[in-house]
Amino acid sequence: MEHANGPLLTIDVGDRSVEESAIDDHLESFLGGRGIATKLAHERIPFTADPLGPENRAYLSTGPLQQSRMSFTGRMNMTALSPLTDGLVSTNAGGYLSRNFAGTGYPVVEVVGESDELLAIHVSDDGVEFETVPELREAHVPHVSEVMNDRHGLESENLVTIGPAGENLVRFACVMTYDSRAFGRGGLGAVLGSKGVKTISFAGESAPTVDLSSQVQSEIHGEAATTDDMMKRQGTTAGTQFINDNFSLPTRYFSELSFEDVEGINGDAVESKKYEKAACSVCAFACKLPTRDEASGVETEGPEFETVFSFGSNQGIGDIVDVMQSNELCDLLGMDTISAGNVVAAYLAAEDEFGNAELVHDLLPKIAHREGIGDLLAEGVDRAHADLGVENWSVKGMEFAAHDGRVLNGQGLSYAVANRGADHMYGNMLSPEYDGAVDPNGLSAEKVELLIHRENKMAVRDSGVLCAFGIDDYVTESDFAALLRTDWERLDAIGDRIVALERHFNNQRGRDRADDRLPYDIEGFESALEQYYAGRQWNDDGTVPEAVVESSL
Image (cartoon, rainbow, N blue to C red):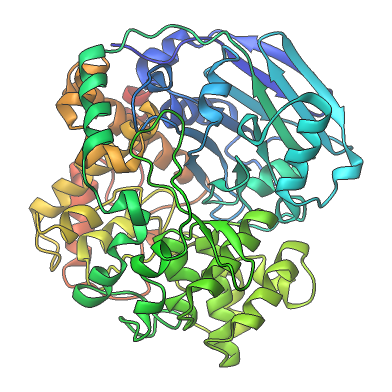
């Protein structure tokens, strides 16, 4: 089987030292991306670590597919102990970083320790350099890119950067690359902020060779280039109207299931503001959304569907320009749009201010700088809801995505059991439920089995690393296996090991069945939960038996 190659690079920002370690055996067992990062985190982050303390470790990692020239491969992974969920979280971002990262010759870079000065770190195939950058304190993300370009010829596609939100330890701060692409979920921007790291650059020409199937690459790339897909024009917002009309679009802090002003924020509304095509590295699918409103001067990339939900329907806002402005503020400040939008929606619910876009745009900088009410909202819904007097719409501390489990019951179960909380991409049960492959109603034994299969599949996707747009529609399981010169059964086993190690890590931090919960009822939920644990060969209390842990290591 083909997998990522090369040593682990450990960067200790406390004593500004670096170390290389051989991880060949781990890469063979865990492929790359999320898989190798999960294995290393389980091995090297103390189970008792403070997410915002020096013992936490942040992992950036690529997979074998970043050595291809195939569409859907311009992504990479980031993993750490999350300050939002208090568990292990992996997230990934697109753009142009992944191949610059791979060019350094390292499949994984690990950041540990805590710096007493704000740092820029430069990683290349010639070594690692540390640069103190006190003048960049609380700088917006694009300004950091401009400074790094002026000083070092490094562009935004070479960088991972945090904004003011990361420095101020906002629990849902994200890590940005290419200025507008985010390692979004779980607050990993706050992890870098706690370590005193403002930006890390990657550049080199030492990417190792991986022998991927050229025939499969060509077929997939050709289909991506020639297919007539609505998402090429509207990105993920292409389904907004359909979802609102036929399923649900959470509205006004989840109090309603459809939005009467959806036409003002749907895919057509986004496309009307799109002014050019854009893509991720080497991808012919080109689904990104550079948008501009000439009247107001607002310019951003997006919003994608989840941002349309979180800053649109869930806040009672029906003007796409207002959503674009919120999207751009989150990118500048370095905040996850799903969590930020939901916590602001919770505040609007508490204050009876739904639809007040001016208030929303006033709140976002206050959250990033922890000013006034922003200090409470920076803690996220789980920690702030009681003070706000609203319902706790989160799972394991993570705010919900748009795809509502009250209507898509399999997705509801997925939210409950997902190791990183209410994130829609962990099991991605929404896809078969939306397209009619399975009935969205109910939690049959077959649906539980499908969820286990899809969680494993998404873990492999994130270890490859492959874009979510590719994995179901353009890259079949047999394609994926053929690319890596193996079979799907072996890849499925890798996915199973990744999920088990994530769960075991979180178990050691006190997570168990009591945390696999939703803020609403689904008929048959408890029975389905038991079937899920049995299908994974876990204990009835949601913990992983030591025998399963040992076999996963």
